[in-house]
Image (cartoon, rainbow, N blue to C red; front, side, top):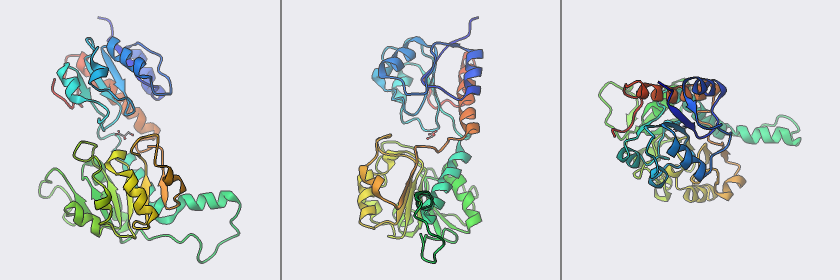
Length: 321
Ligand code: DGY
């Protein structure tokens, strides 16, 4: 039996591409750039299996011409880029890449917490500028992280991994969770709170919810107004969870101390004022960006596709066509 045909929307790390070429009939030569709408549409129409990324918007119109496609493996844990209902209606299995990116995303969240609190990016820019004339008692004074309150919005895998890392900083943990946590599953000292209470209490608020209609602009002007003026907002989840214009207002008016953002409302476009604000650290959606994690994500996509064509359930299937 010939190997299933596979479309990969953009270039993945070499070890993943090597296995993809070995196990499947690769229909295209993926580039290190997002495909055009037409190229993506043609790829999904021609292939039996496809790997797409979080920048590929796969909506009902994109899927309208698919008759052969059996599986769409999303190279991300979040799948807000895919109209899952439309895929399900067409009998297409959709999979994601949970677990393997938990640690790398939690680590990057901590990089942002520490960077905003201790003014790491400002310090780096200062040294590089050549203006630094030596140590000074009042230079680039930051905020302590140790002993503060960390508010985790969304206590899924990544939220928990971020909270676990806070033990080394002797922090108090408050969290919100959509799904009720079974007794004893989380450390008893972690305090579950309603979102408004968490926002009022936390020194650092870190967002770990998926993007859904319910979480779109979850952090809006009203919620930002509840945060302490000394608090920092960290977002490594999805940009539209935060109302970016309201965040910029709060930062400009010093109603919030700063923000660490790995994601933006209209990626790669971001609010122009963010560029001017020294109290923010901006990253280009690097949450899962370690080589090992990105390889594991690709292997999971390939494993899901292989399982389906071997007549087994795809291990990370998120829909039931
Ligand atoms: C995800 O998997 O959802 C991450 O944002 C990818 O970096």
